[in-house]
Length: 337
Image 1 (tube, rainbow, N blue to C red):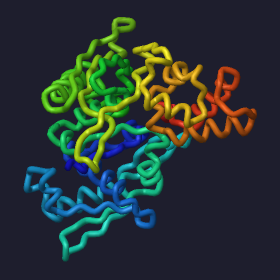
Image 2 (image 1 turned 120 degrees about the vertical axis):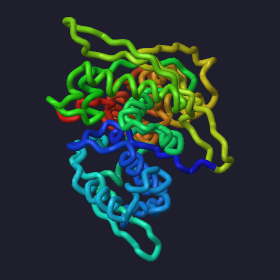
Image 3 (image 1 turned 120 degrees about the horizontal axis):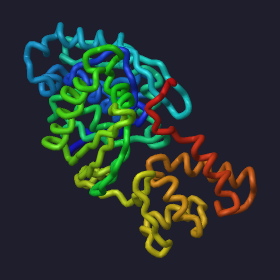
């Protein structure tokens, strides 16, 4: 069974840091996030990893000495990250502290409080599942970053178009102003092209891109991609479950009659007190609602409690939509502008 799926909060995928880390360090950090998420230790917020496990991630033995690993974790304590936690803008660090146990040759790392909260409430604030075993095949740090950006919007076996500004991609890839990769030619040659090539070769996604120029300058990148990786996993049966949600986004719009709605969607929306007559409109506005279904339930209860009635319908839908939008994070890379 592949039990190394990180349900990564979208805020952490979009997080920006004050310093770039290496590809291997990024793989170690995502592993720590996943270990913390499955441990669910609210007191210590801990993630355990042995040096033997780290050696499987880092192939260079010179980088897996006790001194080198401690140096990496020391750096994690000093690297500041910014991300959104719902409507809150968080300034934090990669890890708060760590302990090395000589007897077991194991490191126990503690997440900072808000990183831990994000990991524990991923289903309420929005997330994208990352198969860590698969992504470890990627050698590039930027491959992992751009893959995460695309995974935010993907739906299994569906062609998606998504436009990001060049500056947005640079921010998430921790490319800083006035550095070499800030120059577009270098960015394209050293970041964009190698990352897309490696995604196509090693990860479960096919990607093409197109440059969008404004005033003779490339300012946006339009990605067209198909993700073959599931977004729902059944760990008990050791097999993958294909997602049932309908694909509706700003770039791709699918209109379905209520008779054609997936039966699981239909029953789920009725259970949430959403009237049949607005099911199609709701799926247009919140195609990935299952990823924050607790927020949908809260918004429904708030709407009915404030306005009265028994269902979310055409008359109170605007209020309900606003309430739900206030409960879920915007997938916005310009976090602190």
